[in-house]
Amino acid sequence: MKPQDRSLPTEEARDLLQLVREISDSELAPHAATYEEKEQFPRELFRLLGKSGLLGLPYPEELGGGGQPYEVYLQVIEELSRAWAAVGMGVSVHVLSCFPLATAGSPEQQERWLPDLLAGDLLGAYCLSEPESGSDAASLQTAAVPRLNGLSVTGTKAWITHAGAADFYSTMVRTGGRGPNGISCLLIDAATPGISFGPAERKMGMRSSTTAQVIFDNAIVPLSRMLGSDGEGFRIAMSALDSGRLGLAACAVGVAEAALELATEYADERQQFGRSISQYQGIGFMLADMATGIAAARALYLEAARRKDAGQAFAHEAAMAKLFASDTAMKVTTDAVQILGGAGYSQDFPAERYFREAKLLQIVEGTNQIQRLVISRGLSV
Image (cartoon, rainbow, N blue to C red):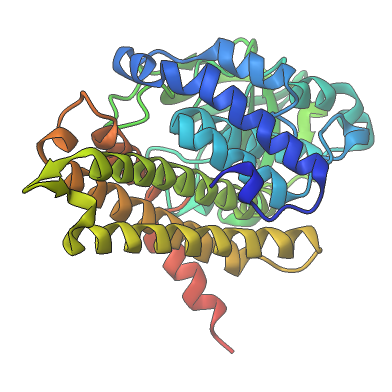
């Protein structure tokens, strides 16, 4: 969907979306395939996006952010993901990693660190999952033990986007007993001694987005870097994920939109039996279903975003949006490969890359089975 065709709250938002479309088409899309093939992280592009004001959009201007409603920010994520899914998801992860400081940090902490985080000079990572605690996040084991000079952090975080590339890590650690009430949140500088990284995961898709373990071995973190109160980390983490799921939903719509555009263009150009294959009902109906699913997914994440912007509860709607949008992306990209036929199975066309990227979005930031659990529990009286 082009910026001029979107429903946006202000002309400023429309200008912003047009800028993002121009950056995406000129600076992102031409390089995506090469970086994906080389499994190379595009750090310089995140600096460009930071200088363009795109890494802190949903946070207040007085904190150094862009002051944009989530309704607008998520459409920026969709635009970026349409051009390069790993970059769109990377921006979403960075915004997620800023969430604990922006919402639970003290005024002194925010004044000290937040401007650099939101300006894009620094890139963030969000550390919650561990090798033995993924969906069951409340069972995490990474421990932060009091020492004279702060907290000694020891443990391993797994499947961390931007691991080794990030400048700061918003990290959930255990400072108390078992369960969610024993978890706290730390803002850890990447230069802290005692931090190392595992080898990059060899992923099916989004290979230009570095993912690895973050290993803490007696890493001393000052008490001044605890965000919120001791034991408040799990609440912060779950609240952050509610917002993060909307970012992933927007990523999914962007990937699906790219796949639909490719499939439509190919179907219009591909001639069989004397006419373009888009004129055959079998193909035309597939394209119609793809377009309808994308429109529905976009409407779902925008409704959740508008609830968030209005200060209403939105966790239930965020889970629905993430579930439906990522399942839609998987269906749309699968159909795009089918419409392109042999070309869709070839790396000469991006359909197979979109397919691989869509699969990750059904898993990351809460599998779709977890989303169904969240939704079903929300239905209980």
